[in-house]
Each structure stands twice: as structure tokens, then as C-alpha cells.
Image (cartoon, rainbow, N blue to C red):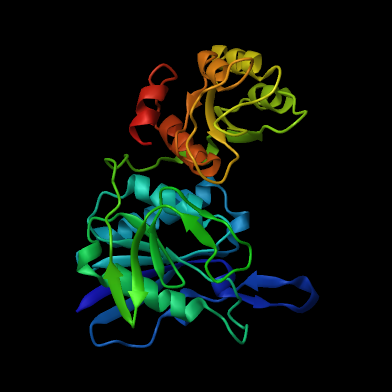
Length: 322
């Protein structure tokens, strides 16, 4: 019999409507435990009870520590984390970066509140438990399970605000078929990074987006405020307008890391253009994020910098986790 720990953090799956005040996360994790099954037992505990749009890096570290504690329990075979969908892609990617155990960690949530007549939370939890208990997913790292599909954390992102299947990208690892979980692939894993320290909580990594008429003023301001890194979400394959290459050079000269990502939903950063484009941005010191989107690139940068990666070593270490 598989033994699964369910860790609740809040989100829509734990939320109920409060009239004109909107929906608020209030339910505890015990309310999410699925009906008993002969092959699985589930125990639950609360880590947080909040909407994921309110989370900060300290909260993400708290979730990561709770997951580590759970997988370290010899009586646990897998972990399910319930989480708000708004920032689920960041938390799951962080968990995957840190996850050294073979035990599956599966993150899920809901698109409709717990008191909605057609709430999707119970089904999503039941399917996540099934995935966390499946021996064929041992070694798969941290995964996202939603609406019958299990996908890798890396590359996944929320692509629809209200649809039953709000996540896209990543690699489909498994799917439900006729009540059975069918495993189709195993994601590529990087060596687990060391556990987070309190330094992670205060690591400041901002995101600046390029668009027609954008100036590097926000990038300059982030550096002046003492940001440890800035992710530049460039246009297309990784470009930005006039003045950005010069701003990147000034930032990196001051010891601020600049990561070059793209605002495009899918596709890699491939520095191609001059005249202030990706070729010039990289020449000025920007580090390309390849397929990693701006939000997950921010998480990786924050982890590496909080663990003391010096600026001169950052490009090589960052690249090793792309």
C-alpha cells in the first residue's frame, strides 16, 4: 500500500466565496483528502492557507522545506502539494530543482472554488495522489497534475485563466485513460541543488519586459535599488530596443546579473540580431535562458545567487540547469 502525504498551501482549491469580498483560501488540507482507496493511504497537513498570488520567496522556501521533510519520512512513498494555479509553475519548478529523492512530488490545484457546484479540486487531487503513488514515476522529480494530464515542471506555464486545463508546455509525463494512469515519458533531470537557506528569501530578481517604445529605465532602476539580478523578457528570439545593450553592460559592470529570456510563450532564446538585438545583449553580458521562460528563469537565478554563486561563475552554472 502506497503512503502519500498531502501538503496544503491554499489557492482556489481551498477557497470559498465570501460575498462581495471575493473568494478567499480558508479550507484546510484535511478537507481535500480523497475517498479511501485499497491501494493508497493519504495523510494531510497544512503548510500555508493563502492564494498563490500572495506568495513571496520566503513562502516558497517554506513549501520546499515541508516537501523535503515529507520525502525524508521513510513511511512516505510520495507527496502531493495543493497550490494556487497563479504561481504554481514557479513553485513546482523550484521543487524540481531541489528534489533529490526518487519519490514523486506532484503539485495540483483547481480552477473553481471549493464551494462551486462543479468544483474540479477533488478530481485533481485524486489524480495527483494516483500519480504520486505510481512506482513508474519514481525518479520523475516534481510534476504538475491537472485535468487528467501529468507534465514536467520545467517549461510548464499557466496559459489560460479559466480553462479546466490551464497549463501548457513542459513534457507530458502521464495521462489518465479509462481510470488508469498511463506513463508516457520521463523528464530529463539535473542534479539537485542544495537546500535553500534564509538568504533565498531576500534575493531580489526583477523581470523587465521589452516592447515597442520601451526604454531601459526600469532595468536601470532595478539595478539602483540593489537587485541581485534582472530577467529581461525580450521580444522574439531575445531582443530589446535602443539603449538596452548599454544598460545591460552597465548592470553587469556593477555586479548585477542579467538573464535574457523571451516574452514569447514558446520557443528558445537564440541570439540572432545585431543593432541592439540579442547578439549585442549577450555581448554586453546578458546570459541567455534558452527554453526557460522568464518566471522560471527568475527562480533559477534566485536559487543560484542565494547559494553564493559568484557573477563570474553564474553563466556556466545557470547554463548547466537549462
